[in-house]
Image (cartoon, rainbow, N blue to C red; front, side, top):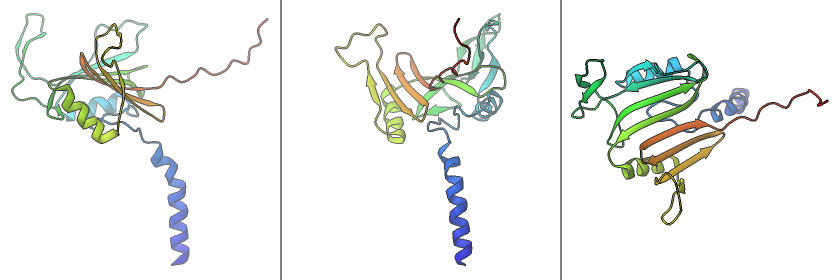
Length: 188
């Protein structure tokens, strides 16, 4: 029995770094360690209709948008003229999620950014995120000059960031930029 307990303790000790590697911020199962394919599958599971961004240029990262409001009426060009807000397929803290944007270096690379656009009470979302992730850093306080005129809250942990903006109503998940590797080339 003692050998089994020691073996189990040793296995848990080795496995502990793996559990610490989980991303600290996850919204409805969407997090930055997912590939775009896995994130799209999760967004579709949540009720989204996803498509690659057709406006992308060759120099851009891969972008995908997932719409969460059913369309009542479309324009002649096929764009949604009148979204149905009466029965949203996804909410966060009781607020309607309109769209989720996913961004990665290429089509099936790990995500670099998630942008969640929502409508409704910004403070309800802020309260829910604070309960889940702790006290945020506040930006854009009254009296502070800001060209955006928005209030921002942010959380940061282990190379990951999450931000909440009140104008527009966005939750942003991103990774901290990695420093570029030092070059072995010597200047001449």
